[in-house]
Length: 414
Picture (cartoon, rainbow, N blue to C red):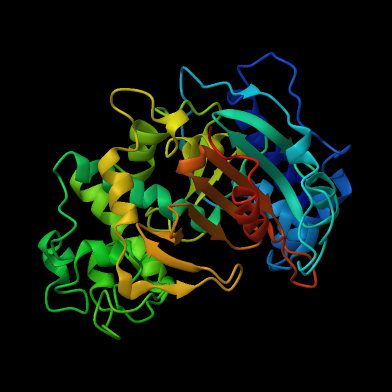
């Protein structure tokens, strides 16, 4: 069989898998949405063929631009994954579009698109989708380079699903984050992890030196493989991003819960937030979860529902997903981990895998290529977005815009 025929058959197989996923994930809402689509029409058959031909011939998907955007929107076609099933009782957002949000003028000091309205910025800069939710209602939503039903890779945003899972078990008294990680894993004794409190791992300050991913991803005893890691500095003394921290926390969730990470998220988070669509979670060769890298693929609205769980509108029940204790612990930051945001110049802290906890209590987690989740509990505000860097490696600056939107006065509570 020649290469052309092989590629053609692969594309048919991938498309059939994708269509099966779409069919299973049909939206349960029949109301007419009010979001902007900017006449987005998706990828042509020729573009899809070229992408798969490139992958089939050993090419790299990390080329940025539309090639990489295709990967972001079609993870199920490219990599192994598990499924996180949608809720049987999905939450359907009320839509109350606001012109003052749509016409919010971005600051002129942005690298690109400064001085544009939010609506024009989304259309002209490297944004795939943006949603803004205030008091539980959608006030702006736009999809210039994806469909609203697309499952988009979240990358490192998934790490706050990991920390939230830890917090759920912590609320139940099943995990004590003050205890060292080797209290839960004997294999980590006499390793670089020994004596490192779980709370320091949650704060991305484990002090663990770089851990090669290749070995971990194929090891059939991953915790033993992580035990080879060395300590580079005392834990809790310096912020140091490390995928190894999210790896070991994911394994801790699995050990304490007795479930795979994807099953835990499905049962304890995804279905409880009323997710309208099933999500995907990347898997390594050995079956372990890619919670620390490619992570989950979700619709933008469902990601926003997760963010909503941290706000007053999402915490109205007697037993909310995000407890008072969890919110307090996120804000009880380790003052040694203070840093200045290179994006806004403000003081920020790392806590519970959030990349930025601002002094006013707002939370932010960003990810590769232009993904982000911004939450302001005090303003009952959630901003979620997806993007793809262009071929000049330029990403959107919605992280900066989100912070300025939060501080603009448009969302001040009465």
